[in-house]
Length: 110
Length: 116
Image (cartoon, rainbow over all chains, first blue to last red; front, side, top):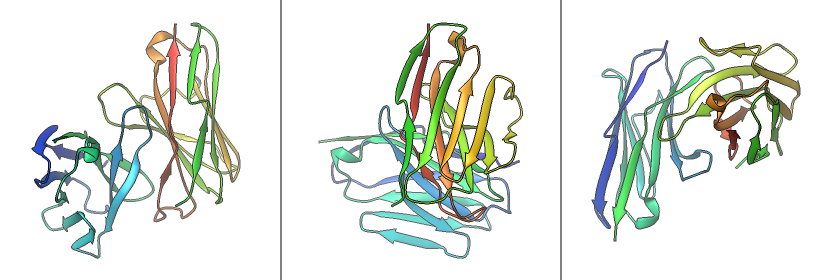
C-alpha cells in the first residue's frame, strides 16, 4: 500500500521567512496530493492540492510542487505569519484511500 | 466549500459503555465516507471506508466488531465504539466525498473521545 513520509517533523521560522515542507510517496499510482493544516483540537483543513497532471500550483502565499518521477511533493509558504503556526499534513491518494504523512509542526515567531 | 459536521465534538464515558459518533455532509451527497483516528501528536490513521448502502471496509488491525460503522444514507455515517476502554480514547475524524476515487475530501471537525 501507499506510504507517505514527511520532513521535517518540526520547523521554526521567523515571521516573514519562507517555510518548506517535503513529502515522498511510494505508490506510483497515486494521483492526488492535498495539503492540510490542522489547528489544535480541530479537524484538518485543506489548504492546497495538486493532481498528477500538474507540476506546480500556487495560491497567494502558498505553493505546491510535484515531481512524479521522483515521487515527491513540497509545500512552500512565503511571508509566513504567526497565524500560519499549526501542524501541516501532506497526503497522497490513489484509488479512493487517502494516506497521510506524519505531520510537520510549524512555529512562526513574531 | 462543502461542510461536514461531526457530533458530538467531545464525549466522556465510562469504560464498558458504547459511544456513537455521527458524521453528516450538510450540503452534498457523500457517496463515500472515511473514518480516521488520531492519537496525540500523531498523524491521522485510516480506520475504515464506507460507501452508502454497503458494508464498511476496515483497514488491517481495526476491529470491525468494536468499531461499528453504518452509512445508511448519502448524508450520514455513524461510528459506534462498542464497549469502549481507556485505550480507545482518541480523536476521531470523518471525511466525506461525493466524487468517488477522484473527488475532493471534506473533513469534519473531529470528535474527542475520553474513556475513563
